[in-house]
Amino acid sequence: MKAFLKKINVVGALISAVQFFARKNKDRTFRQKVFSLLHATPSSGALHRYVDRLIIWAVLVSVVCIVLETVPAIQAIFQYEFAILEIATVALFTLEYIGRVYSCCETAKYSDPLKGRLRYMMSIPALIDLVSILPYFLGILLHQVIDTRFLRIFRLTRLLKVTRYTGTLNTLMKAINREKRVLFASAFMMLLLVVLTASLGFELEHDAQPDKFDSIPSAMYWAVITLASVGYGDISPITPLGRAMTVVISLIGIGIFAIPAGLMASAFTDQLRIDRETFENEFRDALAKGQISHNDRHALNAEAERLHLTEQDVNRIMEKVRHELKFQEQGLTAHLNPEQLLEKYRQQVSQLRSLVQSDDFAQAQDLVLALDNTTATERAIFETLRK
Image 1 (cartoon, rainbow, N blue to C red):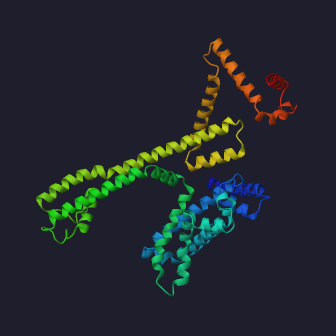
Image 2 (cartoon, rainbow, N blue to C red):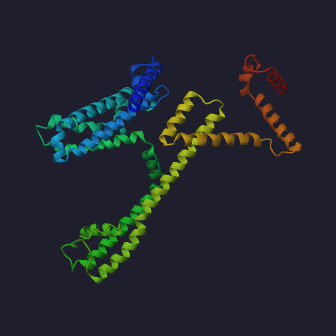
Image 3 (tube, rainbow, N blue to C red):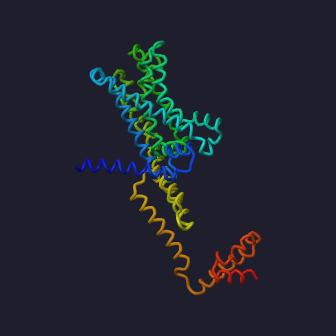
């Protein structure tokens, strides 16, 4: 009974989302409706999230089917089901790709109907969408000409589609971009150490094992797995000097090869902190304006979702910002003696007089004197300061 009621609630929520979407996009064009369906906008509502979840589940189901198809016993039993699921997921991904290309002109970056769409089609997300469906259609067109089974591996690129729905990859790319110089220096150190290790290994082990250490490029394989502390054991030194060198470079490799991992972990954590501080500043700016508008709230919710902030995290940040603003307002007059309060009053009056007597403020004079815009006290202060 509970499962049935839960199912009814899901259907009811979906119907409610469709009705909200239809009401919000009633007077909009078809292209704008498609854009709102595929992108988070103030008029998208919950239906946009349902579409995103459908695509994510389709990606996961498709990848699982691709993996299970390689098991002969499972493929023999569920061959027909796998084919149906592949057609359904490809159809969904194709509709999504066409919809995104068609509606991309709604953004300022791709506003031109022709050049904008071509520019979008060359973007990384669009290329990922294209590669995820292209192997299926190429297999249909070319299966009689060439063996298209190698195209199956490209279907796994559908997993990259999930990166569109998470901000983790964006945070990681920002972290890499910030620390690219340090990472490049670390990579250069690792490459230098690999070459030196391979050269020493070749010189010390070539005579004893000419089949395994036949050249420096061949020794680089041994150098990498030794420095990375992997040690498969298929190639190992047998001379005393070679073994002594292996002990030394293994200890060195533990530190050198751990540098990039430590850098990336630190940079990722730091970038996540920066993003969350930026979210706090955005909320602080929106709150400083007074009442948070619907667009501001939508932008804040989208940013919170990108940063994977829970509702509790968002509420905590909002309370923190409100407390800071309230403390700042109270701090303007707190712990001041009468002389300090008088001086602050004079400063405020002087700043207000400079504002009223400025040339730019002349444009707002009619608005100040209008009875509907200001109170009698505000107009009296204005007349006094203007003299």
